[in-house]
Amino acid sequence: MPTREGLLQIVNAKAAEAAIQKIPREAEAYASNYYELAAAGRFDDAADHLREAWRLDDEARKIAGAVQQAQPQSQFTAIEQDMLRSYPQVAADPAKWQTALAASRNLQLRGYDRNSPEYAQAVLHACGVLNSDFSESLGPMRPTRWSNTSAFISQVPSALLDQHAAAQGPCGTGTSAAATRA
Image (cartoon, rainbow, N blue to C red; front, side):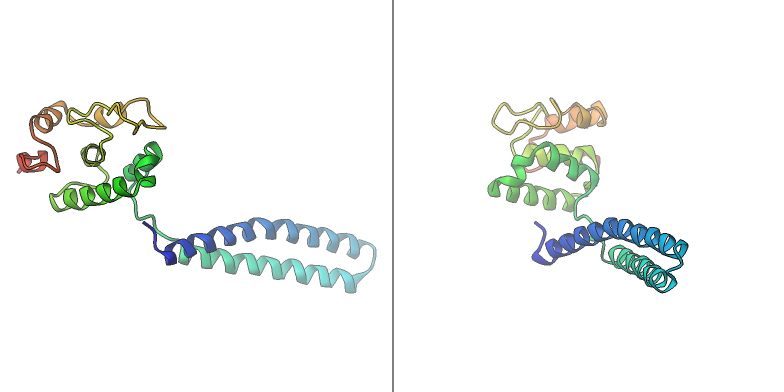
């Protein structure tokens, strides 16, 4: 779960992005007015508009630099983000979320790569989304993005799937795929 500080960083980044998108429109309006005023011979007013356009340009650069420095790094890998998008119920249910976090820590201690399909399958299995044979659970944890988990399973060699299916699973007491690799 993101911390309060992490959420504030996200909010600040979004506000800065909105400002960066708004500033060019305002600067363009000032620049347009500058040209019109200069053409009309109103040089003092034109100078004010030119200065304001330059000030806005500098402001946009400062904000963009601050956003790049404060850009929060996602705490989730690409495959974890896919899992959260595909199965939002896991994050919405506190018990499932704690199970996912515990499974993740356990799998990392066993040497699983957090961005691997086998890691994702093991976490989804621990949360009750996948059965032990990697078929989808028929319970209420239906995916919202994929109709099945073939996107994950197709990336895992069949020999590894056979090894893992023969074991009791990553959170059980039997031999895991990580242990059989060693």
